[in-house]
Length: 113
Image (cartoon, rainbow, N blue to C red; front, side):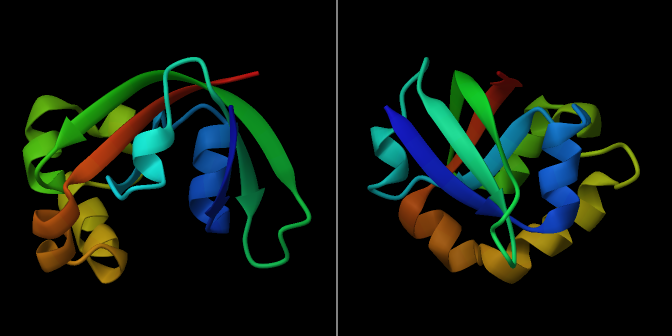
C-alpha cells in the first residue's frame, strides 16, 4: 500500500538526507493502516512539488513522545543538531499532550527507496 505524508522542509530534508530515521505522528485511524513493507511518499510543504519515497521497515507505538524518547537517541529521532527537549517542544506545537493521550503516538521507521 502507498501512503502520502506532508513534511515541513526541515524534517523533509532530515529524512531525505538520512539524518532522521523515524517519521513521528499520532496513531490515528489512517496511520493504523500503515504496515511494514508499505511505501510512503513524502511531500515537501508548502508547495508539495518535491517528493521522495521510503519503505516502512518498522512501527513503534507509544503512549507519548516522551515515552518514546526514553528508548531512542536523538540520532534516530531527528537530526543531531536538535536536542530531545527541542524536539519535544516542536512536536507539542503540533501534537498536544492531550491528543497524544487520546491517540497515542507512532514512530514510523523508514528506509529510502
